[in-house]
Image (cartoon, rainbow, N blue to C red; front, side, top):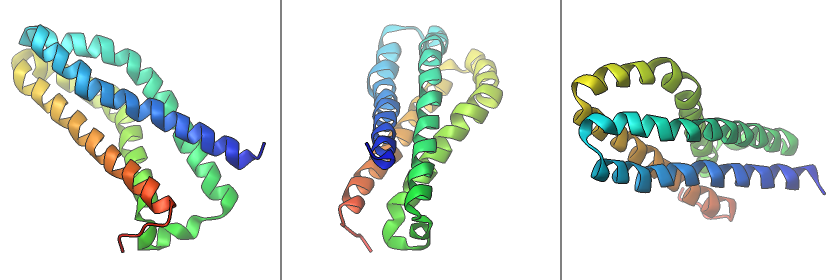
Length: 158
């Protein structure tokens, strides 16, 4: 088996697990919690459930990043980042960078404390912000996935 085939398989599997999890959290978990729990309970329940997914998301974003970097290095396609027709490669990197920063820096060191403090005082407002953030992240992920599939098969917007 070629190393590139293995790298691409790991890359796709990591993306499916990672973005699939974000989709489930955004479209199922958050609305269910909002519908079934009081505003004072929502953030606590969400945090308890989501923290288990965060570990999985951290692992899969690492696999996606390492396998993506390996494929670019192995195929020597760094020059794609210089051309607008490969915008989808920039988008993949940007989405990965946003999620990686959120998962490894912002969430554990900033967001958890801030949500805890704000969540006590304005739980409804904070929960709406959490939902909006998840919808934003899911939307940019979907746009990127569509762009990657179309772009890697030769479709160019530019």
